[in-house]
Image (tube, rainbow over all chains, first blue to last red; front, side, top):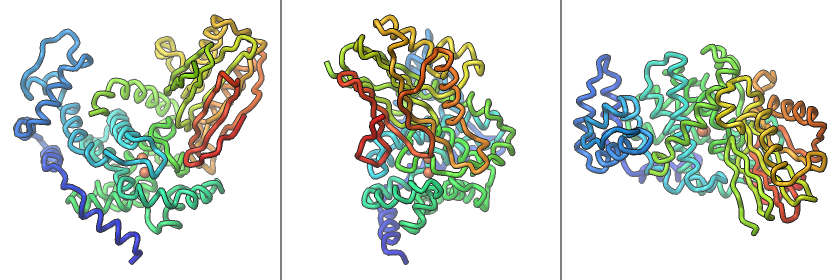
Length: 283
Length: 161
Ligand SMILES: [Fe+2]
Ligand SMILES: [Fe+2]
């Protein structure tokens, strides 16, 4: 096996385990009639999450002129199921992004901001395309570039080679990664998700988020992650070494009846939504 | 003096005190740097979409989202800072596109065409530009030196426009 890959796979073993609440939420939400009570019960077991959920519900944006909420149940009423669940997932996953990005020429925190932004715009996109698995989509988006966190230091040694490939203007970032490292950041992220026991469709969506037509299971999920990521990249959110060196797949936009005006409206949605969510991003 | 002002997405900052204005990670968005050497003032705009007709309500809330309303608002602001439109030097960067052999999906390109159209209306021309391709750029307007530069992601050297 590629010795670098071997080393990185060893590092995957050292990544702290995924907080169990993420899998619990995902499995509750896959149920045809998800019980939100179960989720409240699980959140309440975690003091830090409980504190953050309540703090978010009491933030200026959500509180407006209402009174302070004191329980997870009250917070849920104010935030709504979708926002509460997404917030819990984001809070549980932010730890994996703490020191990431510098190898890709991202400022500290930018990879996390990119992940959150991708997840946020995915929810609006899912409304438009009537995609049902919003929580799985949100989580896949949060995790789509997690492979970069494991490649950070290796990438900093390969920057020059990657850049000279990209300068040709005909090679995608994924192709450059394959040629120079022998694997892509999507592959490394997928390996981590495999280790954590994620469902196949989510692993596949992360593995192929730049070439979603290759996803074997859950193609629709992969397409949604791809579209959400592309929108963030075009807007420059978390834009790194790779820039926009990815293939535009018009057929995927067409598949969901997304016109360019729709995409432009998603830009506007996201720039506003990100401003609202800065608190969540800073954690 | 010589502070660094960061211009965000859908944002513009103007100054008349020798500051450095910088905007990061231009993808399909465009950065427009404008200065009047006589007035010693200038501004940097980072807009994301070509045409305010898409959503006029949003454009009135934040004109800097769009090329047309963004440039008009910037010019108005600069006039208040003592700039004269005919003396302005204007340079642009950004407008990258996802790789698309069919050229169907190109907000970056439309952003650039919109810029040219609007400048034409004001009888202004671009004195320098670094536009297109698929990479990420940072852009700096140094008002102490009246210079504009671009830096590509991952690259140390600056490109002077
Ligand atoms: Fe990626
Ligand atoms: Fe991404």
